Image 1 (tube, rainbow, N blue to C red):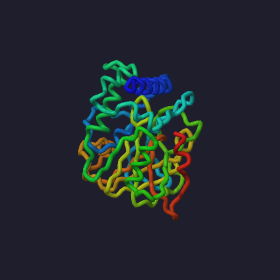
Image 2 (cartoon, helix red, strand yellow):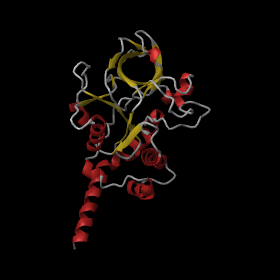
Image 3 (tube, rainbow, N blue to C red):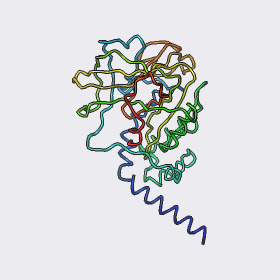
Image 4 (tube, one colour):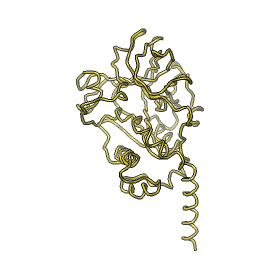
Amino acid sequence: MYYYSQFTRWSLALCLLLLMIGYVIGENVATNRNDVGSHHHHQGHSTTPHMDHSVQVFFTPKDLKLGNIIPIFFRGRNPSSSSPHFLPREEAKLIPFSPSKLPYLLKLFGFSQASSQAKAMEDTLRQCIIVKPILGENKFCATSLESMLDFVHKIFGPTTKFKALSTKKSEKFGSNNLQNYTIVDAPRQILAPKMVACHTMPYPYVVYYCHFQERESKVFQVSLRGEDNYIVQAVAVCHMDTSHWSPDHVSFRVLGVKLGSPVCHFFPEEHLVWVPIISNTPTHNSLGRVSSM
């Protein structure tokens, strides 16, 4: 009787969970597939004859000058759909997060093995579970806000206060497009001894790929004006030493630079950069807003 009751409670909880997220599952996984920030992962990527616009987020430190013009692809948000939310930790724990469970997960969420959603889920599970971190990197895939904050605490220390920085776009920002952006204010560096970057991954519910690198990285806040005159308050990170990256990383092809050269990139709107709070650094973003994702 105990085992039956335990199974029944688990099943009811899972059914309620699936009802809550099921109506947006297909759309979220399909539309987020090209917005996963996979080009920010440094393990390596095969070369392709045609480069899509979504990789046009890279630049070099010398480009960070007032008045400079940089071609950037910022993904627009569909105004008719709300942003997906994190699952509570206890609900996320009810669903296995493992490549070995992919056939079960596809049946659970109603995806065929040949679907684009299945491919996206497989790629996410591979990046999160199978692919090894590069030298000096600590990585973790967060399936809940609680687990993300635990990872950030692990990197910064249990008593360190921290905040999340993210790119903010105008509410009237248009659809996906590649255009030239002009730097309209002097870029501001956020002085932080460490940073944790978290990138959204395509999955039926919110999953973030978070990682910390021991090598030097610099965080900037940059005000940009597009050709459409909309302003983007963008977060950017410059990796000052890329000698440990794969020589096939897409940024080297985009920028025409060699392995080891400094590489910077802008963050899409829902990706996060966590930094410790230091009294003499800008504090325009607050932790209180993070839980609203």
